[in-house]
Length: 85
Image 1 (spheres, rainbow, N blue to C red):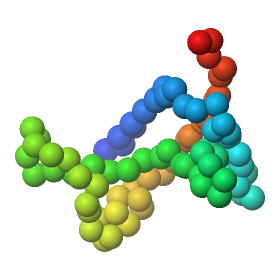
Image 2: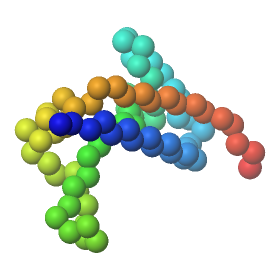
Image 3: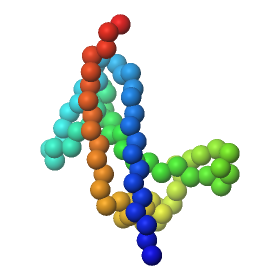
């Protein structure tokens, strides 16, 4: 028997004024953070053998593929707002 897991992550960051939201040819939004440099903030697994210890993203390729096969849907939205200084 399998269970459904829903994970919601919302980040609020203060970023440099020159960062922009751009779209790939497929219409996927990403952040342009410098000339020819783009950032996509999405799901990244972190693992540990000690819950109070250090966490790492060092997982096997097989584990990552299996985990990504479990993802049925993903939604990422970017919104830039000008802040007052």
